[in-house]
Image (cartoon, rainbow, N blue to C red):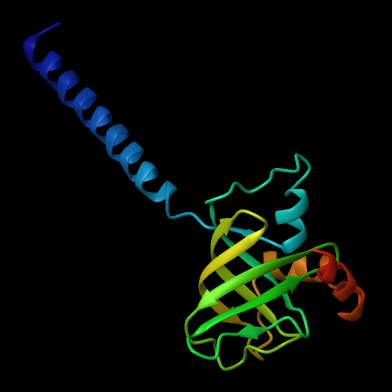
Length: 161
């Protein structure tokens, strides 16, 4: 092999190694910023056919309906706690901050935060469903599957948890 071809080969190999290293560093950095979407029943019983459970300390987004009668506000701070329900489960959410104007009992919300022990989500952000027709497909499918009954049927389950 002549020197010119060998130098070109070294350059091509160096570029490929550099691209591989850059890709792996970007993927590693983004790994900690991924928030997976769960419903309350998926947090309680697992997600998918493998019933993969979210781990304590995992960042996630959870979507459900605010259980009527579950909203508790601290009169001295901006802290609020409430329960989210779907057809098969109820979880607790705590949040400190100003809630969206559209937040109310019986309303669909998405809470983004960290899962703590006892199926408690400590939310960093709470998003209330607005009145437009568009809903992301994954949330719309989960809502159709999980919200088939009235809220009263879930209040008994929420009182037990």
